[in-house]
Length: 164
Image (cartoon, rainbow, N blue to C red; front, side, top):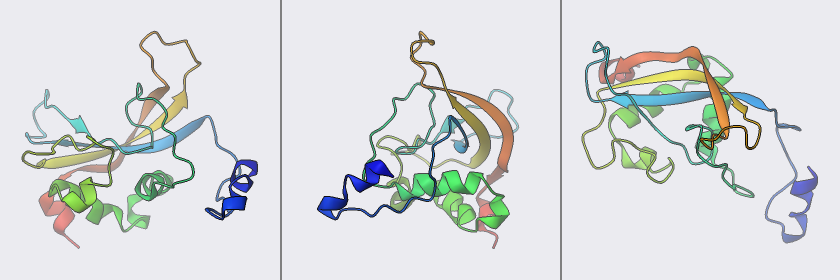
């Protein structure tokens, strides 16, 4: 909260904060899509990249203060719950399947792996636990290590997401 108070003189933000501390590990949803068939064992799944939330373990930490990237924050909060308790997730995934520019424009620059081409046929949403690596301990430059916890939302295509 001390950091937030430093902005008070400019009246840009308030000092409200939903969380008083930031933990060293966090659970996140990772959304991937494919244009192929989900039954193929060697099918290539491409991950969507969000503007500020963890994704690729080698991506550098972004500077986000004082702006809140709402979609990134909402997906993190949704990961803490069930997809059935977060009704906005299903329409969001449907828009990704349609390559809807209004939604894909909220991702990181270049974060839509299907930009400029056909949209994916299927999406899968997996839950991962991210942890910081010790600085300098990874010669590959990783910032995070991640462990797959399972599915957040099962693999599905347009028909599933179009059902209300």
